[in-house]
Length: 197
Image (cartoon, rainbow, N blue to C red; front, side, top):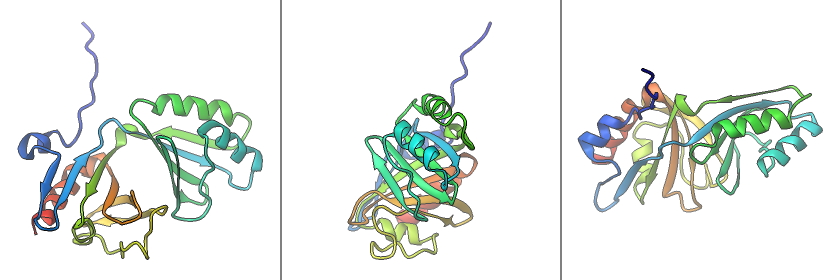
C-alpha cells in the first residue's frame, strides 16, 4: 500500500517543546515564528540578456534586482539578489512547482536554471524592538537601518550557520531569516537563547 509522503518541519520539536510562535525578553520583547510551507526557487539567468530579463519580468510580474544585496517585491513574490547571475525567489505556500514551470516556459531559448529549493530551507521571522540585539548576538553585520535598510538583504552567518536575512520594514523591527533545513533547529535554538539574554 502506498502512503502519501508528508514533509515535516525541522522545527516540529521546537513547536512541541516551546510552543512556537514565541514572545520573550521584556521590555524589548521579540517574537519568533516559523513561516511554514514557503516556496523558494533558485533562479540563474544571464543579467546581460535583456530578452531573458524581460521574460523573467513577464513571468514574475517584477524586475530582478540587479544591484548587489537588494530585494524586489510584488504581491507575495520577493526576489533576493544572491550573486551577479543568481537570485532566490520567495513565494507563498505551494507555488514553487508552478513558479518553476512558468519560469522554464518563459525562459525557453535562453541560458537559465531554475530549481525548487522549498524543501531545503526553513524560514523564520522575528518581530519586536529588540530584534537587532537578538540577531547581533550571533551575526557580525551592522543591522541598523542606515547600514542594512529595507529593500536590502545580506548573506552572513548566525553563530555557526549560514543565513540569508533581510528587514521586512523601514524601522528594522521585523526580519526574515532563511536558513538551511539541516541547520534550522540549531539556528532557532540559538535565537531562543539570544532572546532570553
